[in-house]
Image 1: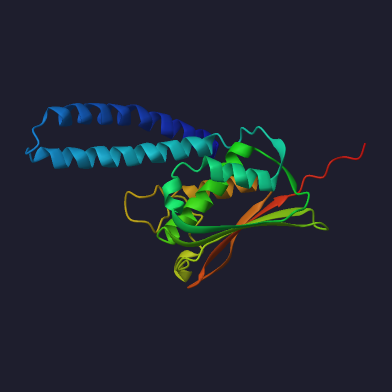
Image 2 (image 1 turned 90 degrees about the vertical axis):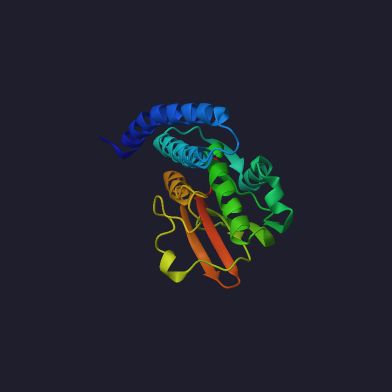
Amino acid sequence: MPARQLAAGVAHEINNPLTGILMYSSMVLEHLESGNPLRKDLECVIEDANRCKEIVKSLLVYSRSTDSRRQIIHINKLVEQSFRLTRDQKIFRNICIQKELADEMMLINVDTNKLSQVIINLIINAADAMGGRGELTVRTYRNKSAQKVFLEIADTGPGIAEENLNKIFDPFFSTKPKGKSTGLGLSIAYGIVEQHGGRISVKQTGPEGTTFLLELPQYIPAES
């Protein structure tokens, strides 16, 4: 059975009992008095069940990654759209955002929803790495002769530990505290970029920050 089909099957099978656990746990919690010692246990059950729901969502995203609706778009426009789609704008309150978007024709043929998901994930990870304070730089450029378009997302965080560098794209790997991440964000991003014939990597990391590099094929219109 293909991996994506298996992921979809597992996600659907887990989702049904999880829904029941969340519903009945919440119902019981509502009827417990505020001082009841069981409340804390039930809150833990609900918290962990919600975390499992997030993992299920990520598995479903992965399983659907073969379905693609592509369109031709300028990468700068996709970057701007991704910033607007970032739900939690509060995380940027104390972050200085620098956009160094090249003024060149940099068209890409991509599934905009999926590529936005990748960009949003990298932006939020950068903000988290800086603890909500620092400088976030988004840079676009191209290599005309190689017909490649590049997107860099750089933060001024503490960097990625050397022992974690070869694991950051592994499924379920995360350096965040338990319950704060499913550990699937970067692995799904890796799969989406690869599906588009591109590449995602860590360009540099160290005490002064980390730069992720996204490389995509440039769309070249056919001559009429």
